[in-house]
Length: 394
Image (tube, rainbow, N blue to C red; front, side, top):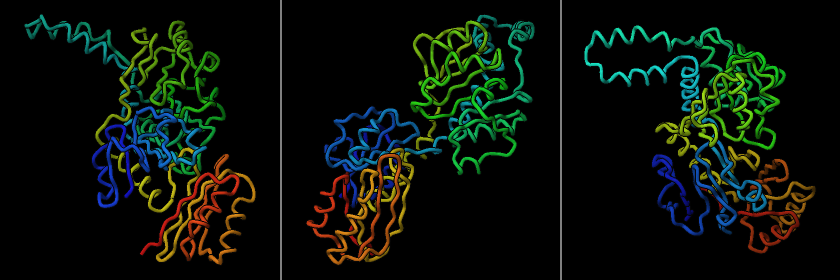
């Protein structure tokens, strides 16, 4: 019986992916095989000896101590792209709010409650609506910084609205490159993108290389009076630099999904209460995606959409047992494992080995189930992090 601990409200459609005859799903389990979360902050103490995986129903994992969990062989999953459409739609809202007098116009109309005469109300509205005149998005230039699942969708949306679209992503994957429209003009640097854009939208993860990447220096390149939109992560933007840019007119507006002390209420700022992925559809998509990934890992050892382990998938064969092995990415460990199996006359049917940064992960299918002694011998190899055994299928 696998045990799944939930530390946030995970959509029922996702939890239903775990068959109850082989899974126990509960928020109070003390020794889970996996933990499912959304925004809950995990700590080292949550990494009990039984824990094998953490599934984040969302893209960001800054609420998980990934480095520490990696050392213990705990695979951390996320759900890139599952909430992309929800975020894309909110970016459009931000763009429209930035160039049309929507908020101020609504506030003005709400202040006209005392006027009961229809003709007088119409006269006031017609006389004052010019104060809220804006500009259309068509023909303006949007710079998309980060061209992953969300960024590429935002770029396509902007193209459909007849905007000029520039893109920059120093870590553009092959998959993202195929997904990206040829009409997006690729920039060679972030500075080039900033200097040519009327509006800049951010879609990068929080890494050491991206933390406060929008700072006083980078904002010095941005086009005077540009609009900056941040529906990615608060930490990407340096608060003091944005405040200064708003004060001196370098930025006309900063539209953010992350309310920040010291910025709330400042002229030119629109903050939303982290609504990016807050749709019923996105929550369901994320829950179903993370549940499927965690289940495949627990039952078969396969890994997809992990932020700390390599992507690896090996189809199960009936009548074959499987060893899943996590180890430090150093030479000769796999050779020692195969030598142990060979000494015991255990035939390897199929094998897959992949590495990522400082860790490696192996799926080894064998004809005979390994004894406890063999498992202990493998685990005793210097550099092995953990060993899991899957009995034959079929």
